[in-house]
Length: 386
Ligand code: XIL
Image 1 (cartoon, rainbow, N blue to C red):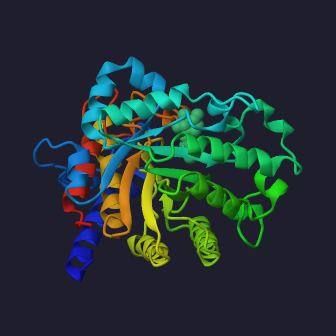
Image 2 (spheres, rainbow, N blue to C red; image 1 turned 90 degrees about the horizontal axis):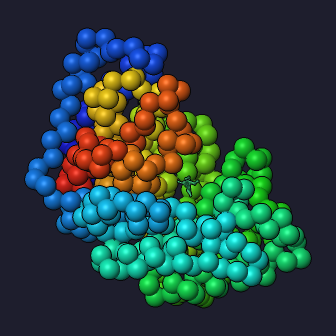
């Protein structure tokens, strides 16, 4: 990024964050002070023309896509029409997680994910896999309790060979390992205490990547994690630990090709430091890795009731973040974790205390564009070409 761009970027950022700062001190339902409100309204989210996000991204050598669940896409024609228009990549939000895919130790149910893969293919979208190794208990089947240090290796390798093999040659990328770093777990390598770590030791990550590469030598293999975005001590520590993990994997010749940055952002978080984030991205890139913004969305939990204000702050968060990360040429894809507020995990996992519907995604619950859509469109339009 040249200096002028950086200056403009920071100006924009400060303007946007200025209004967000005011938000964090506001109780729910209260209004902005006049001066803050006018600062806030000065921000212009005009996006030129009607080109879909996928086309704007493609013009810059980027991929735009979204996560979606089969039940939504197959039952909601309005969503399906918008999804095919806006997206160039589809990620199953549920269907490739262990609890959906492997109901019994020796039974794989590919039907729902295959339906999504066929939908993607029919509509000329890339298909992306999420995820092969994840500790999260709700994403693991009940039978997982049989896994122990004797059988873990075989169960994991069999899973990866079967699932990656099933989509070999037809998939853009795989999140091979998801969320393996948790600094607060207290280990010097930053690895999260998970069943896989307990049963297989710290080399389980390398093992998983090697197995995935063997089953599909063409897929882009990704390490995916969250909590890397902000200027907080936790995020500092996490960035350091992730970088250390990536360096270690690379130095051992592990077939890893990209870092997935989940980017579940929060519109009320003020601790955003573009330089710090860019430094991290360029450190990752210098290892020869690509970067995917893999699960982008913006929480509006702590914002006021007023929808216009909320939408502007969510949009500002999208644009400020994307304009910084898209300056790094190694960033090749932006995937939002859902497309429309009609279907978003935020409504369940990060609901508002006042129970009002959340508005974290590019399209609203009526599948219409909101300012967040404009913000993403603008960020793509302004991004340097890859
Ligand atoms: C979430 C889904 O969106 C929910 O519907 C599901 O019940 C729980 O998981 N990080 C990840 C995703 O890697 O798999 C999670 O998806 C969101 C956080």
